[in-house]
Image 1 (cartoon, one colour):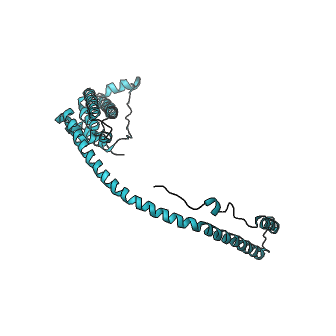
Image 2 (cartoon, helix red, strand yellow):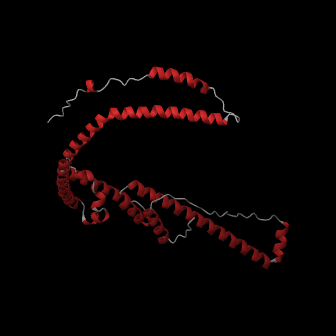
Image 3 (tube, helix red, strand yellow):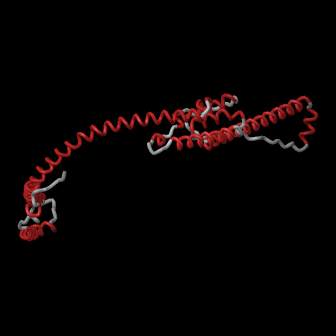
Length: 287
């Protein structure tokens, strides 16, 4: 089947559409030269509006003629295009029928492949591993491609399991009070770096709070010592007189700091952080 155009387009279509272009151009240049230097003043507003209307009318006449010529030239093509589109629509109908059936076969093939991948997943991951890392989180869409062999899928699953095992061993090095939160972050992201960074931030917050509590305890102890000394001085006036003539002992006061942190984290990390605070009886105020 071949698309054959019987009309000789070179003969049927004019090489150009001739009109009195040079004559019109010369006349326009002469008539429009005046307007290039025109200056509208408050006294010539009426004349300016009239000139504008005249020029617009001239422009509209030329544009109207152009559109008429275009319509005449395009008429054969418009008829040709309509016929071609009708033929294309006839071809599109069976294409759609075949495409729908192919899509159904592809869907069926992918579902069968998905079941094979699922079986391979169960073979690689233990029951405990399945709880922490369900199939939907491990599944890679490329495994369903017809070009991806099951051998390749099994190798990928083994590599993922090996990496997870190494990451879980790394999480065992996390201090016990932070380990559960770190494991929660890892199970949600499967990113050991994010889990470890989260632990680091938690440790910084805990250390800052410990330092603040130590400073507060030291200040309280100094305050108690000072109060005790003042009570003794009041009970021994004579000793107070002696001290009055001597040098006043120097006292050291520790400044108390209020620490504020701004953390960027996911919702899951925020939940884990809140759990850590509550488990360690740490008071916190949302800023």
